[in-house]
Every structure is written in C-alpha cells, then in structure tokens.
Image (cartoon, rainbow, N blue to C red; front, side, top):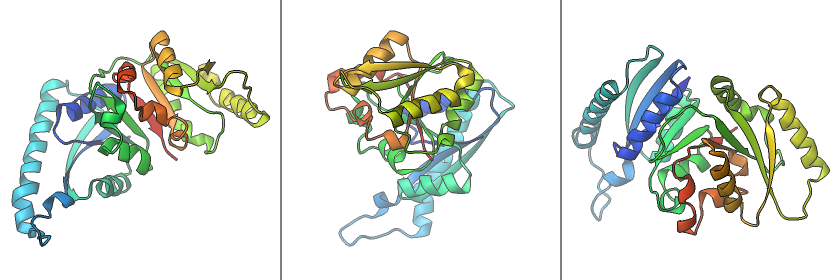
Length: 279
C-alpha cells in the first residue's frame, strides 16, 4: 500500500499523519510525506522575478528537508515502531495540485490522506482549500481527516449513494478492503424526497450494491429530508458513525455535506473522517 501524506507542518497535517498510522496499523505501507513549496509563492516583485535554482535550494528546499527530518523524528517519538510501516520524505517546488498528481503517478499512490482545519464549518476549510482541490481534481482515493478526529477502530461506516451508479462498481474496492480489515457495520444511505420512490434502474443498482457487499451484510437506510446535510447529520449522530464514504462522481449530489453554507449547522461531523473514492 502506498500512501501519500501531504504536509504543511501544521497541527492539522500532523493529526492526519497520526490518523493514517493508526488506520493502517496492520497494513504494510509505504508512507510518502510530501511538502510542496509552491512555485507561485516564489514569483516576487513587479517583473515576475523567478529566483535561481541555487536560491530556491537555499531558501525553500533545504529548510523543507530539515523540517521533514524533524517530522520523521516526531513520528518515531510519538508512534511505536511498526515493521509494516516505511516512511519516505519528498519535497517539491511546484504548483500544489500538479505536484500531488505527479507524485500519485510516480509513487503509484493508492490513497492520499489529508487533514482539514476548522470546527466552525466545512465551507470555511474545504472550498477553495488544498483539500477541496484534491478531492475534486485529483483522481486518487482520498481520506479527509478533520483536525478533531482521532483514530479508533471503525465500527460504523456510512456509504452514501443516490443509486445512480455512473461508475464502475470496482471503484468500491477500497471500501471493501477497509470492511475486511475492521469488520465494522456498513450502512448504505439514500436520501429521498417525501413520497418519492426508486425508479427501476435505482432498484436494480440497489440490488447490485447489496450483492457486491453481500459478505458484510449491509443495511439500507432511506432518509427523508429536504436537506441532504440535515438527513446525514441525524443519521451520523444517531448511529455514532465513524467514517462517511462517498464516490467522487456523486460529489455534486453530496456537495451540501462538503460545502455547506450555514456554518453553525455543520459542526457535527468535523470529527468524522470521510473517504472519497475515485475511479
């Protein structure tokens, strides 16, 4: 398993690293710690002066390497040695998204684990942020870890679906792998309007999901609420959900969960990680 851990050396990035180490405790993993010195930040002055390679090395790359070494020390100091885990540090001087994409391809990354910040509302810290860009623009399964999340064994996993399977069913393999590791309960959630019933295609897709996850004995939950995020909130709270999973192609349907505008309403799941599956 190859896991990319982008870091800006913040507490929130450290929390995501700690979560990933717990989450993959029993899995053989190569963890790649990546710090990106943004190219756009290096262009200074009116005439778009771009510093020389020597200057970039001295001002950006060397300090980043030093901080990454300190981060590796912190990991060794805070987490007991695990023979399954191997850590590598990467530093890049590039545009952030391009750097993520390049490393995903070069290192054959299976999952990106990233932190998000802010307990006041997801709009505050996902829209327009690095994490928001990654989950919507990089085709790699991404685990988003809120700054308050602490890893505990997953008992309740909620998978949100509109039952319009516009994706290859194999995209769900990472979720299958997790369920095999943790033996938690899989709750498949569909939000519908009152008096609305599933069309024949949706019913067929529901059966397909049931067959696919058959060994985990999934339960299906039909929530009726005009607001997707309110329905999810009630469910998450009543079931003590440990992780929310969604497919990237369904992001439009579920964008209310991620990009909520009513800040006060969304504090409920700032400590629940969510996994976004990409094809």
